[in-house]
Length: 131
Image 1 (cartoon, rainbow, N blue to C red):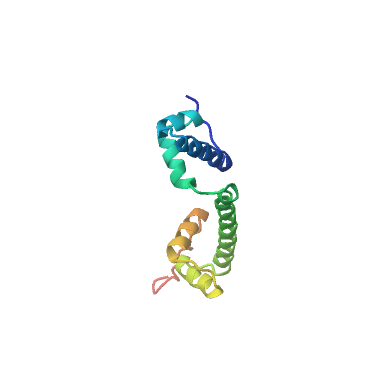
Image 2 (cartoon, rainbow, N blue to C red):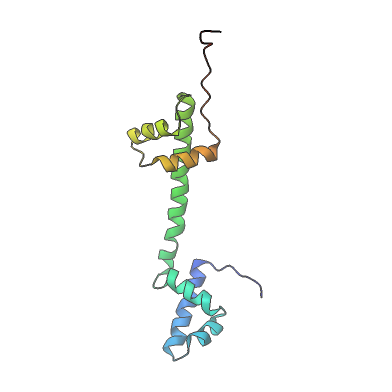
């Protein structure tokens, strides 16, 4: 059986069709067969989209997009601070970001720091007594 991706609008419409069938006295497996999905898919959709309207289903996508834009801004600012203060690590950069008003913790900044491939340059020895 081929897999088909359904949009949130299609899912909500199919759930409505299933509710109509259930109201007419059909069992859940019969309603699922009528709308063309498995029992498991129906229950998963009902848990995720049950009671939603079509306009409400679009909201999570908008939030995802907004979060990704904020994350890009945060990464850009983090890289700016890392280049400006070359010897600062992710913990000091976290403190600077918090002072600027970003609601972040050190775990988030460390993860983004590693994703960007940032490293703190090693401290060079100054020669010492023998040098």
